[in-house]
Image (cartoon, rainbow, N blue to C red):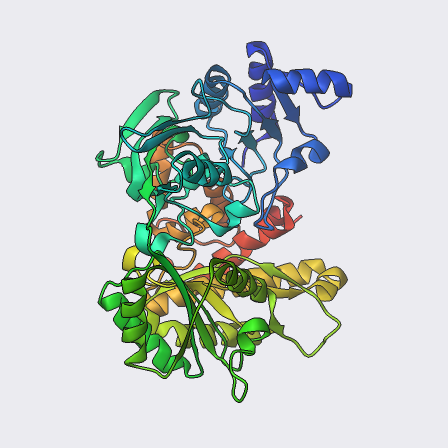
Amino acid sequence: MIKDNQLDTLVGELVTAGFENIASMRLSDKKKWMQSGWAMVVNNPIMASTVHDCSLLHFTPRLLLRPVNLDQLKLIVLSCVKKKIPISFASGKTGLSGGFTSPFVVVDMESLHTIPKPYFMNMNEKFIEVDQNVLVAELIRRVQQDTHTKFIFPAQPSSSFKLPVMIGGLIATNASGVIAGKLGPIKEWIISIEILTPQGEQKTILAQDPDIGKYIGGEGRFGIILNAKIRIAPNESTNDARLLFGDDLETAFTGLQSVQDEKIFPLSSEFILSESTLPGKFGALFKDRPVKWAILLRGNKNELEQFESYVAKHTKLQSVHLSNEEYQAYLEERTALATQTRSQNSDDSFILYPGFEDVLMQPQFAFKIFNEVNEILTRNDFPQVMVGYGHINFRQGLGILMHLRVPVSINQLIEDRQTMFHRIAKTVAEMNVNFIEKYDIIPKAEHAIGMIFPWRNRNDIANILNQINKKEMFPSPHVKIFQEVCERLQIPLDRPFTTKNSINSLTEYYYCYLMGKLDIIYGE
């Protein structure tokens, strides 16, 4: 593990370079130093807690920095890499995967400017040049506004309409969103990116570069996203919206498999399912029987008709045309229903814990996987999930993506947090191992793997360590902590993992992040 004196030496080096610890300063002085970018927060849990994300996983970083220019960022990077001190980079802090969570060094990129203007629209060549800290919601709005709705921004995560999703994080996780069925992930629209490498070099990487996949979707492990040129997408002028629904799950998803096989990709195709009946607005669609599935479609009228026709070949359905307002209302209802659980205690409330939440599979297996998730939840004494929902034709036909999380009783969490966290960790581990080993399908396919990175690459740790030693990859807090967990469990990293070791290592590793305490590793 990284020793205190190593971090103290790093702090001393940064102070010599011009950074100042603001933890004990007066508020007016803190603001001045923070605006300058030369501020750092050293071993202050209250100030450092501002970098928690949406994952419900966290450590308090020993050292937090918020640079405003590239010279400051390079100083930080070179100092950490030289000393092999784990470092991670925070963008909008909206991730579900704990990607930047670290007890070591965290760099908050929110105030970092890398180009003269936040963004520039080139209408002649139909692209936008944008800085890493620009909000995706702002780009979605401005592209439509500045092009008089002729073009749209090609990646639109639903979270970006509510949370401060930033371009740097969007690219670093290769995110997509509600229009990914037709347009694919952000990688499909990149012209070029500028990165900062672990050696402190600025590089421009073109879309055709064979190494670009290391940076788009690499979550900052090989290079920090500084800015990008991104193509904008033509807006379909014949948008239509409709709702399909029925009461037979297995035949409906057989129909969705045929839609994928025929490569029918509307602009947006979302689903919601329940093995009993859908609640709310969806449940009221039939008056005499339960509604077990519904599909929201938006796009070209011909594509929507083809989509409906292929599903109708396999299952009985009803179809309703929707206005834009009605479509949006159903979409919001679908997302809100994700919190529904089957619990015998009507007085209880639940927190939904991520960890396996984006399951990518072929549509024909969706209902089976949904039931198997509930079986694992039941086995670990959690309530079942009432509804599953997600994207159809995820990223131009890779499969169907279902969003699922662990529903955790707030009352039970308050009563015994430590025991509950261990149950959550064990459940997340069983889900991931089950999906990978039994079905060869991908959990966490949309929200990036974040802190699970070393576990998912557990049979390639030697190569990862070699890349860190050669300064091709930043020293990773996740790799360091995973090594410590495996050492404590006496799991050798130089041999392939057994199923038991896979589950045990992820359980203990995830538990550390839920508790946010490194002394768990040492058993103190």
